[in-house]
Length: 304
Ligand SMILES: N[C@@H](CCC(=O)N[C@@H](CS)C(=O)NCC(=O)O)C(=O)O
Image (cartoon, rainbow, N blue to C red; front, side, top):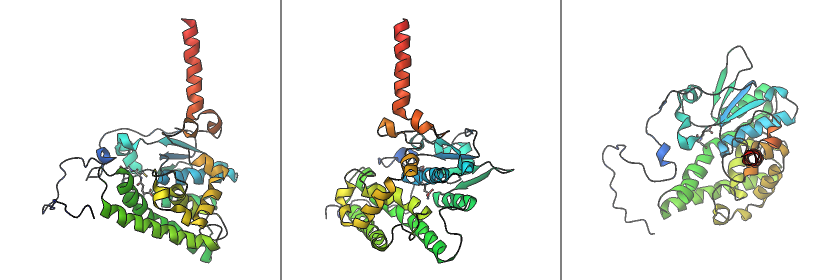
């Protein structure tokens, strides 16, 4: 192996001296808490989502769009982007609703006092219970859905923080680390593949919050959207049932909407920076906003 000859010996006590050089190194800190005072924006709807269209963020906007698709008008929401690359997760307002400084976080303002919820899994359970949807209320079906939801919460850090980090983001390619996490990522894909061979959805015959949690991560890798080249590297086509499920969920109208909420990069028609109304998907994606801006600029030029 190429990386056996490391000349690094850890000191007895670790100190924070310099950024590691990896992607996101500028936002990593060994301490918690706010770095600066800044309040969060609040919109007109009962639910306020502070997020970004990463796999963890997409889970919640997909759930909200699925609830609206089912006719729950109480699930109307404002979605505000949190630019984690610029450190917006460390504002005083954000830290008040998530002391862990990570998106997504939700505030439910429908009752007498606002309720904050952080951790994507907790938000999915909170919304499922509030609206009585996408999580069986009792029995083995509920146990199965919660088991897979928590499987995702425990497993995805190996896919993202482990495999994704060393494959796509680390400043050096470390064969040992990539091998270790590619092995685990493939094992996890195989776990899912075996489950989906006999079940239409992860928790059984019904679509649930387990699918909404798992799809943005494992579906994203399977569909080649998460880390460039990872689909080929991990041989995702071996996992035929995962591929079937990933494509099937990708077709859901609520998923098509939810996955572009708070998306700040990629194709302009797939970026909806803020979501305040169901019409925003038609009227306020970046391609539309840029076209409107170009029309305004054109009018100004004509007037000169
Ligand atoms: N376990 C958390 C993980 C959330 C998380 O890792 N969010 C990332 C984006 S995907 C984040 O906000 N990172 C900012 C940072 O680490 O400072 C959840 O599922 O909600």
